[in-house]
Length: 523
Image (cartoon, rainbow, N blue to C red):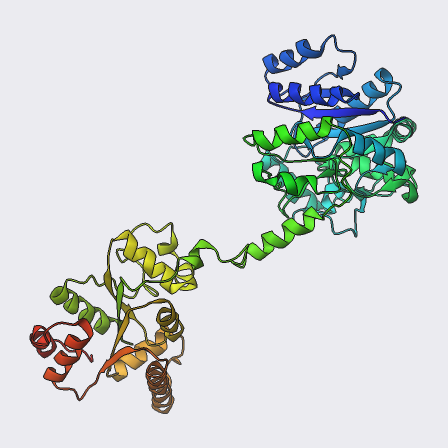
């Protein structure tokens, strides 16, 4: 007959803990809880008063628990000793936190424990199990850890650096199968009794682990792997959880009920404090009869897949950045293409004065233009280039514009092609520039091409190659299929240039005559 004693580690929210203990005991189980000594004295008193006369609930002397240090193991050992002494009929001890919520029926859990007759605790090989993804590894055991990493960070890392320089290399006690894994487990009574006897016979083990870092992920895992044959243990936590490589837990919400109850686990952490609906449904499922469900899914792999897919912008389909990246037909975009940015600025600003259409500059290359606050996208060129049309649409909507003029370097053909595909009314004017030797020298210098004190032959060769590159960009620009594309050429008369501008901007060409006469569009 299986009887479970839950070992409950908690540090806050006494009302939530009271509810948790009540539904655990309702199923015929017993509970030993530890309330962190860092918690308010009033909170600890609320719990004590609530269960002081309940024969199925015990508590232990509080420890000031600190993340990553021995105090968590110390509190757990106290609960184990209390549970073994107080509940002599308990066959299994399930270690939980106050953030854990059941996801299966208690009957299904009892059936599982009766059938498997095994300890269930993750026991990956400490050295070669690839369990630790980031941060210190061997140093967790190798160095002496006297300072709490979160409370005394400076001292922790100065001690760490000093020991690394000194070549400190602590050796674990002999005969241990060093293992690591989730700190949430379910162990049989006889296993815990053997662990306590083993520790009493070998006090050097406790002394060693007291100075390890994050021992709650190593201590019990190593004890079980050392004294329990592999055939009598399941190296998988009975509680469903998933942490990022940086130790941040996945948090579940009200819409995760079906996902959670499909897992081959019996509790889950971490449920959002605000997700009261899913907690209520899960507790009702826990205290009920067996559900008979036998189909389970691999939730960790599912979360990993959707998480890492999401990083590439494909999570569950297009993200909003891409979904709303089209500039519809009610908005018109004019592009001034000029290799010489100062010429592009000059022409764009002059056209803006005549047409009252705002000119915003080379927005895919330059910063400092009036782009408004666009969720920080305006401050990072890589983000602006990620989806040129979406960024431009955001800018137009932020400024409530239906028309806009931008500048574009002739090398930005991929951005122009993207605008062509995602903008219903795109109009492009390319300016034919002239390039003096002074300009070519400056361009070569900006591109890191100019050889210091190079010979005239080297300089001329480099200039020719640069000009050829500019011409190639211009040729490609005329072949990418922009429906409304015009080019203001060197040999065009002022009248012809004015007519081209009038055609593009749908205005009388006379509006532009004075501008093109007074404005040098080449240099």
